Image 1 (cartoon, one colour):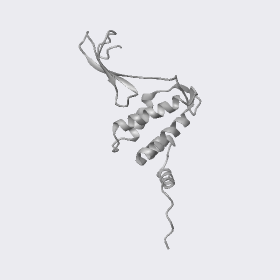
Image 2: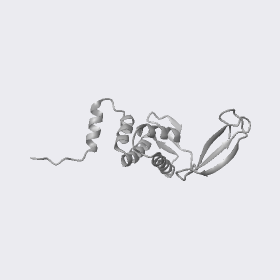
Image 3: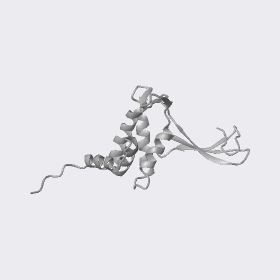
Image 4: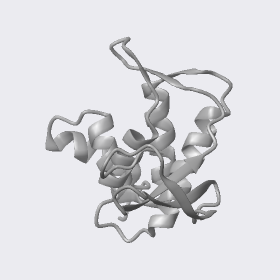
Length: 155
């Protein structure tokens, strides 16, 4: 593993242990050249996934990009970071176990929205506002109205 500080390719692993989600290995590393210490994570990757965008463009699946978008929607929400990590790992496992290497971005968005809806409604609406490309306040209003259960008419 290359040292992020000096670029030395001969770094040493000082400690390895399962990460909190038990789906990855956390390794503490040391660079003998500059004395820098850093952490890496190692995960199992079942297959290389390719995302097919709505424009037809193809790009490699990026777990970090998925994680960033989910974390943005969950900013300042009372959700444990471990729970978010578990959700992201679950989404990635689900994508990898679908049996397809090519996955539509729309399908990924639907899976993320499904997971967010179970955890936090506010994060779900935030993610949906970007995913569904809301243009005006009315778009939010219509979406939130669909979330609310029917109220019985009081007479």
